[in-house]
Length: 237
Image 1: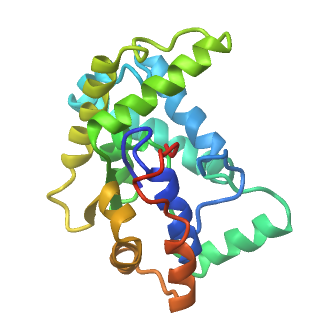
Image 2: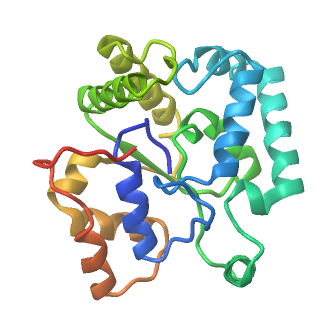
């Protein structure tokens, strides 16, 4: 699952989990694997970028050498530490979940930086299905800015220029454009978060079928009930 930060990907991921999508255990409050966050951020830092300043990375990824280096980095980390990267633990539940993977369970992950790294990930998982969650850029940008100002008020150091609304709007659009570059693939599906909020059962049915999930009407109703309407301010990432 891809999409800019504060675009509704958390709400979408939680709903799809209730429909049967397996996305790991060791996750933060936004359903993101800690190991995958570190993996992405470490590489972005290596090339002089960050999630809030992605241009140096995106420019590098356009070159054959940059693409190869990124793919090699991701592939070696997945081979060496799949469990940690995708948020699985070495307890009984973790062993059971990993066994389900071997039996063909539908699995995936949600981490907004994947939007930037998607071309490289698709070389490793070429048959992956991509759900791109898109939210109104101004709404997503305003949420990014609010969160940043809250963090700074609590004493955190500034994260680039994301205390500036215009910068945040441009950043969200950069993520949207990065995701839309995958739109020519038959395995790509874009969904407007506002549409999910307006008609959650219908949109979740479409996404669940696209992801090849097997779910009951009761599970669908339960998942749809978790999506808050757009009259409620979203805090999802």
